[in-house]
Image (cartoon, rainbow, N blue to C red; front, side):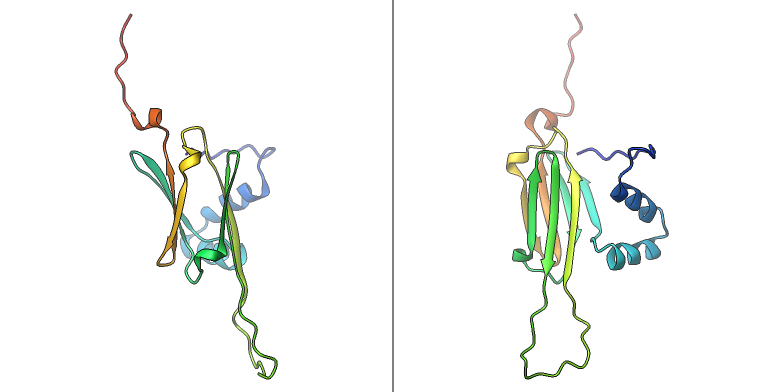
Length: 146
């Protein structure tokens, strides 16, 4: 998995620009805007010797709310949680529950074994395991001199 930060203003997408702006803001201000205005959860990306791991903090969701899709090199994670309707005989005085949804995309490179990507949701954390291909796992090799 490759994380590249570029400063080419001509080729910069709106999402890339927004990520750059809000990731550079102070933590509390950026977090509030990221979760409340832009509606996408924070993510941790961890590199291990044999795989990459993406963790998304998405409490209050169920496994069935998520949709994980790999389209060539673009891994897209989305979710939608709808609130249940109240019966028509109940009078709603104030509604603070709302629909929650988000969509995040990550570009994966040729180091990832895309056929074996797995995901699990536990204790409010969605964890995706992206295994590395065998030739990438062996990080060091001896090169013979000719």
